[in-house]
Length: 254
Image (cartoon, rainbow, N blue to C red):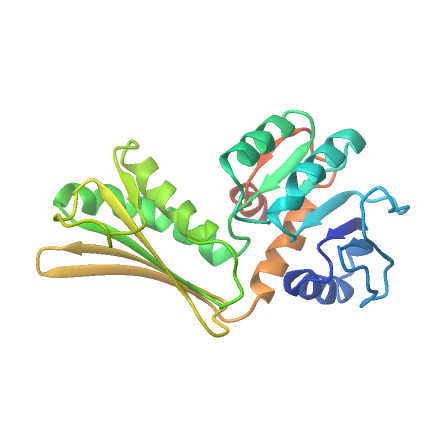
């Protein structure tokens, strides 16, 4: 039985994960942390990590970027593995994640779903074939109107996959409104849409002469991210220090 502390337990994803975990036999959420420490589930909820008395094998984080620095310090000090799902991190925070991973096991992923992580591989393969043939590459991501960061972490991960396949020769363009020039062949455009209750929609567009190839992923429920986060928690518990990804989880499941 893997014991979990849910960091950001009263948020939308925290509640999804809590409900999923309640129906699983191999995991149990023993405590939650939230700035609004209202008990919505069977486990106790605290407004700070230091107040938490329960012992856990791993912390699952779906909170806010502002809380990540303290969370990393806590996990390093207590030697508790961390599944870090919060997006919108600064460059300094990403560097701190990498440094902390040298001291404790951390699994960080921009998106926890199996389908999206397969998409990351597919677009990389497509880029190797199509970019060399003169295809332009654009990413369009759509999310609900309450999402704080833009572009999404998944959109950036997709752009990084494209760029990695092409030896980092491309740069990212987020806003063309102030430009009056034709498209740079070495750019990857990233556009964000925010509205309604869209869970998550990502299109990677390869636009060539007289043909367009689009690879898409649509999330219809937050449950896909919750299932992935719990699968990652089971994988990470007991692992040595290091920086892990969902690709590592998928490899062990195959």
